[in-house]
Amino acid sequence: MQKTFYVVGNLKMNMLSCDEAGQYLSVLKREMRGREFSFTQGVICPSFLYLSLFDHLPSGLTKGAQNLFPEKSGAYTGEISPVMLKNDGVTHVILGHSERRLYAGETDEDVREKVLAALKYHLVPVVCIGETKEERAREETEEVLLRQVKAVFDGLSKLQAESIMIAYEPRWAIGTDVLPTTSEILQVRVFLRKFLTETFDASVAERVVILYGGSVKSSFLPAISWEAQVDGVLVGRESLFPYELVKMMEMFENEAKKEKTKKRI
Ligand code: PEP
Image (cartoon, rainbow, N blue to C red):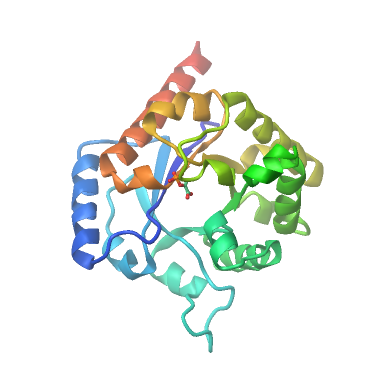
């Protein structure tokens, strides 16, 4: 089975007006013109306020959200429901991002509840996990990742588990231009596959999409993506440049085509 690669753009709390978001979108559409993606999917995650502007995206792109509240509706001032997102055409939702863990105090348990709500309403959760600089220095990376994935995956059915995308985002690599090595990312990928195989089975482990995120740029893609055998990337700052985002999609698409040819030989 030919796999799909993902490029998820997290626009965060950027673009200060609808005009600005609209301009970004026009450039994105221009960059996408004439391109076809058979093996790569882009997911663009703007602020909630601009989601409705991101309807009718070119083929190859869908829209995602950056958070949700784990209830369908009700007295939850300032929150947004998974059903609202679904009804607005959102396909994916970033959950447990380190900035939410840090600034909004989200715990592993909160992330689990949000993941369950996303699954219930057929949104694909993009669950961010990753260790801090200090945890890495104490060689606790695997312990931290295990705690974070166990909180999310424990007790799920195989079907639920394989609908989740995991984004390995070491906190020390976000916004810093400091990256893990290819072998460090590969090691995490192997670790996650092992966890999923032991918790579910090899076919679930094969199906769960694993992304890398943290200071991703197109020039780094070979080392942090195909050499590290991940299924795509979660991109912060560089996703503010539509040219870069589309370039990354194209690089993944070319890599997928190469893999396909290799298989045929
Ligand atoms: C992120 O915050 O998810 C991220 C990957 O940011 P950046 O690419 O800017 O490091």
